[in-house]
Image (cartoon, rainbow over all chains, first blue to last red; front, top):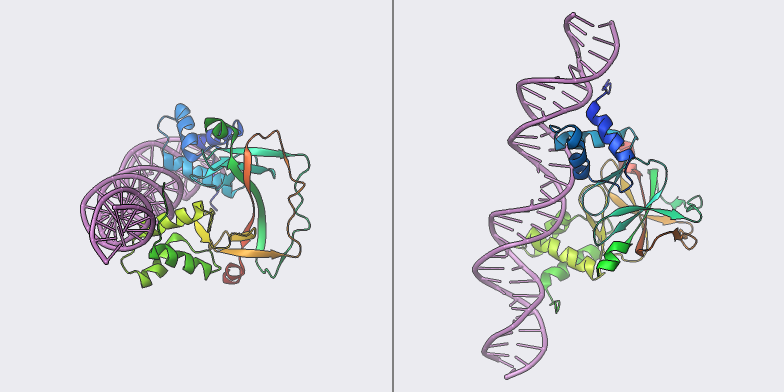
Length: 128
Length: 128
DNA sequence: TTCAAAAACAATAATTATTACTGATATTAG
DNA sequence: CTAATATCAGTAATAATTATTGTTTTTGAA
């Protein structure tokens, strides 16, 4: 049940995210999708973003300020600027390795490991 | 400037956090501090929590749901339950090592590295 | 020990981010 | 084609946080 019907609005949201690498907020998605669907509502954007996250087609990034969304669901890492809130991908010489990182005395289930960085982005350094 | 005067309310907030290891939210702090200062306002709690974070005396944890606060400012790692939102500390056999983890093509300043985990906590597993 | 400048306060209003509700519309399986 | 229902737009409601305002504390210097 909950048979997930096709929707043009959802497609448009996903297509937009695929074309972007700056991890847009719900508002940014809304602003864009509105060009194609002038009557779309912000609630629809939020609902579809949650839906797409739940089925794993996009990734929700919880950082400071509003949530952000990323169509790249491969493991990768983010830098968040404490100053302007922008989020960018980080690339490494060698991928971080968490294979030896096993928690002690923990009886829950770990589903995801998040490594992320924050500080001041290049643009904000120049501003100051 | 901004000479940070002493305040009994701020002390109480900090003392409360020091005695806890469950990373309380602003509301939880408010509920407790109210016992000692029945007229304290939630705004005061928020203001002091930000202040204490800014000067590095506590750490603000941005996760899903409301922000949480931690008096332990030493490097350590958190597990967040996707189900109930609780946050707990994780202990490791060997501390994660980020020494080899250097970003390429990045011109900002990295101030903090966050490694955190999420999934389902023991209590939520039992519930289901 | 006053006393005034400024930080901090309580109370409350406002803002921001997100979720829930409702009746109309679009999609899809039979 | 049609009925069932997921999705929609529009809007109201909630949750989390920040800002404003006039009053009270704190503190350093007179």
